[in-house]
Length: 219
Length: 329
Image (cartoon, rainbow over all chains, first blue to last red; front, side, top):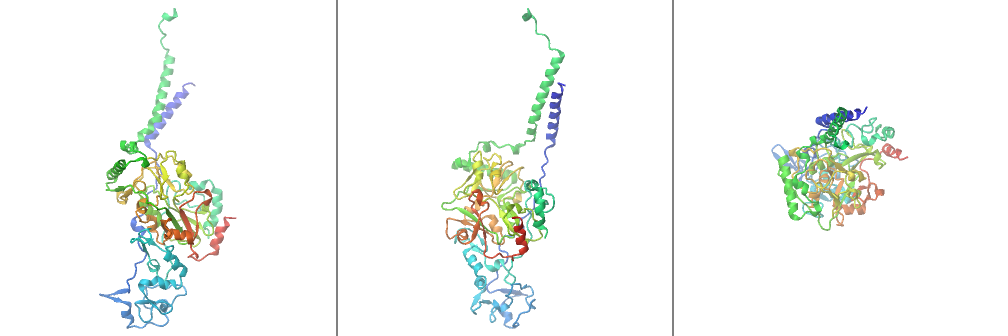
């Protein structure tokens, strides 16, 4: 009997030494592989030149050069026969001349008939979107880039049309980049609404999670 | 008479007994030490690293030597010529972050811009920002989901709430550190001296926002992804076994730039600035908007605020609101 104690020690020693030689395999998930290009840094839309121009074969023309020759219909059709790339989805605001000048296509027009260069488009938007315009002026709506220092030369506030398409201004939906994969947050596929969960944070309340799962997702 | 006799020769039995006891004792010692075989040179600190003082006690010359050492280590391991600096806080600046919940669409651009800027481990990928997808109508974080993976966002039935370090004015994480390796600087940013951290993870447990991350394994970053613009207290490479956290990109923001997460936000939901400047965007938000902080009741006094617009940009959906209030019953 007395020999059992040292024998146990010897067996344990053998197990530890052999096991340590094999090393510990941690379940390390592979890198997400997100590159800088996936981040799409910079303004979401290219700003128009003022006045806007169009490349027509070898020629670069302003809007008015064509519109002087071809009159537009009084009531626009949707979808448009010309400018077919334009998707018009701006709510009730579906008349070209609400914003574009009837006489001169190189400028915009306000409700009272006052014309505005394209560069000052935010003032046009402000006629209807007053609260958002006020927030944008104060910097609480929209993107400010470059610097946090008030009035620094590097600071730039993007204009309305650098993020929103004026013809269909709702911000486009986009694909989300990959989520967390750290050990503590659980495996990627362990979404709480997919039945019994592998997520270590969820395990302790598994019965509750299963109950709440029905009304987080099943709609 | 007995004293003159020679000591009796050990019996065969007693010899065997002591021999086996000694052998098993030695093998137990070997077993206990066997994990040391796993150690390689990367696990052991160099002499300079071992002798280096706490960040707050480094003299100017010693700081230069420490930066030079980090530069050499980066060159040796990644073959990248890094610019390693020690960027100090500015006078009269206290940083505040504000995040517009009405605008966030949950695209996670901020998460990955942060990883790229701050040299987090890519495999496993440490992320300072976690975006919660929450049912509309509630702010019960227990019902948020980190792992949403939709073809496109935002989802009409949910809103999105990014959470990162709140840079608290009353931080629980710095109080629990047994070696004072983490502290709050004069501009409100809580930092870590990665060379002083012993990896006990008390701070991770103390943080009510789960904002701190631990390097369980040696961080792995491909050399082409390494950001060479480094600073001592923020994005220099970390070692296995230390904590790390969001520092509001102090190497950028202390020089007037904006944090990487803000620059990557496509919808402008993120706002950052100096709260001591009444004309700053964040000061206006705190004055004019409906603002709240997360877990106000725990008394951490965060410098990270969430706010709303007057009107939610996506039309209210009664089904979604019912979904959120259902859990609160």
